[in-house]
Every structure is written in C-alpha cells, then in structure tokens.
Image (cartoon, rainbow, N blue to C red; front, side, top):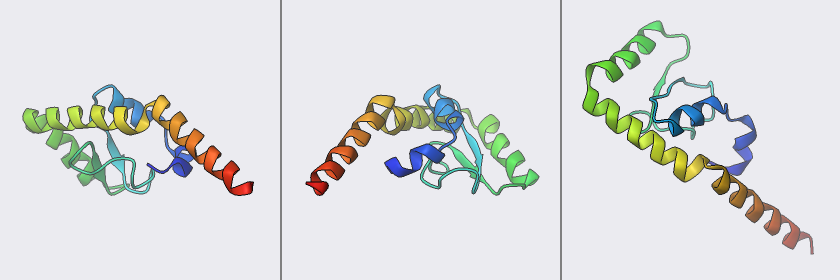
Length: 102
C-alpha cells in the first residue's frame, strides 16, 4: 500500500485481516490495493447481493480455502499494515522530502 492511501483506508479491513478473518469488501469501497481477491480477501461488486452471498459461500463451503485466505490476510496485515511498517514508511517519506528541500 502506498503511504498516501493510508489516510483513506478503512481501518476495520486491515484489523479484520490482522485478526485472521476473511474480509469481504465491495469494489470501490476502499483502495484497490488494500487486498487481493482470492489471495487475502474477497472483493465483490458493491450492491450485488448475489456476489456477497457467493463470497460468503466461498468461505463456508471450503474450509481449506478459507484457512488459506485467513492465513494470507494475517501475513499481509503484518507485512504491510503493521504500525511499525507504516511509521517507517512515513519516516522515509518525510526524510526524503526534507532532503529534497535542502
């Protein structure tokens, strides 16, 4: 995730991911790079009851696939959304911006 997007990221989605839950997110409801469909979450068309139902059924009908989604979600959250990672990226951005002004 780009540091510029963190201000517009709904915090609940990375929190779900960090807790090992499968996040089911409507397309356009959050930044496109927040999660990858079928890898660490499920993206559906916003407003489509059928797609939401199908996404839920994907999770409940295949425990092995759901476990993989949960594990990948937790790994993504730790790698990308951990506050130490975000703070480090922000610090790097601020340092490079300061150096450009000199």
